[in-house]
Image (tube, rainbow, N blue to C red):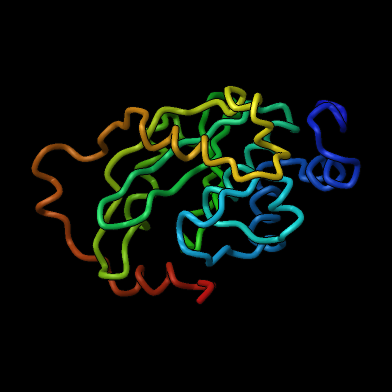
Length: 207
């Protein structure tokens, strides 16, 4: 673990983040200590510093906080964008343990959050979200995923501690290539969401 202060965080911020000593603790912190940001899309893109201060985050902001916390644990700060149709995209902070991928995420849907590092490939990880990724019409909407983006490329804008919105990151995520999860013809044959799984995904939803 790198020493506190190397990253621009102040002592109190570093104490909070370095106290999250495992990926699952980072996820629990996002779930239990950070409220869900219900502002309309496109209003804010808070840095991790501002998320800690304001105590709220949507999926992009939560992924940024998770990536910063993972960085302090010695992981590269990696994001993967999940792209959907008739629905919002979803952003994951991803990490590897013994060659296997896991993910941390902030979501208003129960099934779109943490994944244990048991997936051999990013495609396996992304497809694990498929049955839980749906819109309010009950349509399964996940279609593609991006390669991992190392947020070191945004260190020049101080993405971890900026007082300004860090729009450069989501703007980059939406223009990079994405890899399809479905083969041609599959989309037309998708079933609607099972009512029980639909209801399960709503547990704990911020209204």
